[in-house]
Amino acid sequence: MIRHAVRASALLAAAVLSLTACGGDDTATPAAPAHPVFSEPVARQVNLALRHTQKTGGAAFRQTLTFGTGKSTAVQDLAGRLDFAGSRGEATSRWTIDGAFPVDARETVLGALPGRGTGTTAGRYTVDTRAIHYRADSAGYWLRYAGDIRPLWGVDSISHLRGTEGAIGGTLLEVLGGVRPAAQVPGADGGRSYRADFPIGEALDLFPLDLRQEFVPTPLYDTVAGPPIPVTVDVDREGRIVHARADLSPLLSDDEDSLLAGVTTLRADLTLSGFGAPDPAVAAVPGGRILDGADVVTPTYEIAAGACMDFNTGMRHSRLVTRVPCTGPHDGKVLGQHALPGTYPGYDAAHDRAERACAKVTGRGASWYTWSTEREWTDRGAGHATCWAVAARPATV
Image 1 (cartoon, one colour):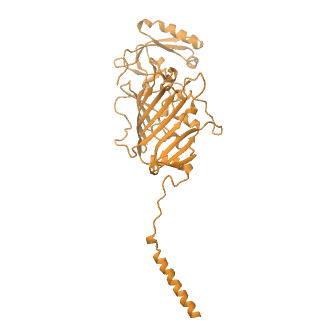
Image 2: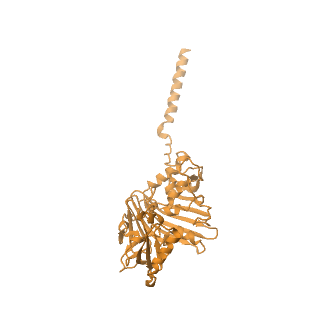
Image 3: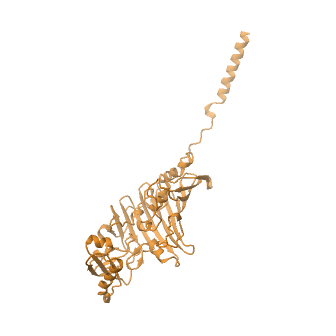
C-alpha cells in the first residue's frame, strides 16, 4: 500500500510540473497599457483630456461665438494657433453682424468707441505670458499691453485675451478644467463624448469686462446656487479634446433696460486640430511697428488741442484713444479742450454744458464731443469737455 501511494504521488507531481511548463509566462498575452484618459474615473476624464491635449505641444483652434435674436445674429469667428509648450498664441477675430441685429446690442458686442460709434469688426492678437499685442484692421501698427493695464479707473477690457489653459483667452478651454461630467457615450473612431456643465460664474471669464456688466448677476460665492452652463465635449481616441460646445444663454438678462435686450441665445463652439508643435513657430513679438500702450493709449481729455488720435485701442471704451502723429493716417483730430468748473450738475446738464463749449469750434469741423463722468468730475474738482473732428478717411493697414 505504501509503495502504491508513493508511486501515485510521484506521477501526480510529474503531471503538475508538465502543466506548469506548458503554461509558462513566455506564452502569456501582455496586458494592454492603461489609456491616459479613458482608464480613469469618468468624473476626471475631461480634465485629464485637457491636460493630455496641452502635452501635445500645440494646436490650431477655431471658435464661433453667436448672439441670436431669433431673426438676426452677431457671430464672432476667433481662429489661430496655440503653443502650449511656449505659452504663446496668435489669433484673428472677425465679426459678422446681420443688418437687423439691434443697434444697442451691436455696440455692446463690438464695444463703444469715440467717433464712429462701434469698434472694428476685425482685429489680430498675439499673446504670451508677458504681453498682449493687439492690432485693429484699421491701424498700421500693433499696441503692446503689459503689466497692470489701467488706463482709466475700472477699465480693462483686453486682459481676458490672456488665457490660463491656452495662451489665447476667451475660449472654452478656459472652463473645461473644472467641468462636471454627467454622462459619457462612445464617440467616433474610439473616442468619447461627454455631457457636462460648469458654474455660471466661470463663463464670465470668456468675455471683456464691459460686456460682463450686461449679463445676469452671478453668485458671489460657490455656496450660492446659480444656473449651470451646459457643455458637450468630444475627445478623440488619443485622449485629445477636438470639439466643445456650450449654451451660454443663461448669462443673458431679461431686463428690458439691458443693452442686450432682444438677444435670446448665446452659444460657443470650439474646434481643435493640427496637434503638435506649431510650424512655423508662434512668434512672441509680431512683425511690424509696435507702440507701447502705456505711452500712447490715453483718455480723450489728455490729447492736446491740435493733436490727432486713432479710436480703436482694443480696450472697447468710448473715452480711450491712441495718440498718433497728424502727419500720418488718423481717425480724428482734437479741436478744443474746455474746463467745466463747479460741482457735477447731473448727466443732462453736463451734456448741455459740453455741447455749448464745443459749439465754439463747430465752424472748424467739430462734430463730436465728450465730457467728464461724475466720478472724474468729483475726483478732479471740475469737469472737462473735449471736442474733435472725425478724419475724412480712417487709418489703413
